[in-house]
Length: 198
Image (cartoon, rainbow, N blue to C red; front, side, top):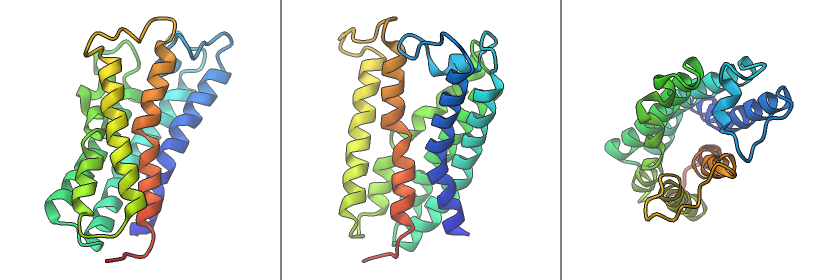
């Protein structure tokens, strides 16, 4: 059961990026540099269902995988609190993606009440849960992921007034942010499938 749930976590980025590819291929003239990924699911897209349905499916996979992460972390000696917080953050992230697909742009509910930002502290909670476990590779991934997400948020929200995000490149920056915030779920899930080591 735990392994199956973790495999669902592995599939989250596969499904998400698959949705982007399918949506972009169905929209002649779509520009990944200047357009948001979510525009692939908007009413102006020729086939919004190619994006919205997979995104919702990916969100459901993330929610289900959160239980797998919880069980795997507990199996490795992770405390109840950090293991639960890790799972809660991943589940919240999944809910935000379900809502993103259910309520396409420009619906105000598209951002899922900001629950997607819950993915930012998730690596830190997982590090906390793995504090007594030898997992140097996974721990390095978690640290780098957290730093990358913080850095990308500073850029995307223009904190520090760097003004790096423009209409001509907003799509590229958004995709760079997604690379910082989504693939780590698959890497962590794969790492946690292995036999626990103390």
